[in-house]
Image 1 (cartoon, rainbow, N blue to C red):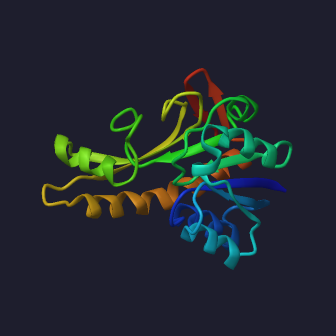
Image 2: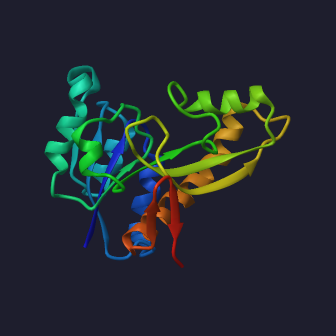
Length: 204
């Protein structure tokens, strides 16, 4: 069984897309083994409870810079893949090295545009509209020591309309996120993803 850990900081809609993909059978031989949140009281925790998924809260206000070490204590030799699904705390240290090319993140823009420090949530879509670009989207990438700088696995584009509000654009991108994340998990679980330097090859 291919075991997955999910890290989430908010409502958990991306987390829900993985739950749904497991339940539907799209993600075969996969199980969500654990959810970790860095914030108490978020709805992602309720989603875990409803689906009988083990969950832990590592409050970032308490653990601060040590949160990566605490995550590693929970996940060492436990899961095959870590999925950052709306996760906001910075990850670093041994967690990154021990899960090299075994930890993915989804970002609500087409990296390398509109990413890096301070670029998360609605802020990304505000910047997209401010710059007047015509295409945005989402990116699933491996996590490395930088911020949104790991090898890109998959991207999906969406149109940006002149009349868009940040919230409207966010919803359009979210729809693609909910397809992209399970797709990449499926590819990785089937050993169809190979990393060569900063480039990723996907086998059919």
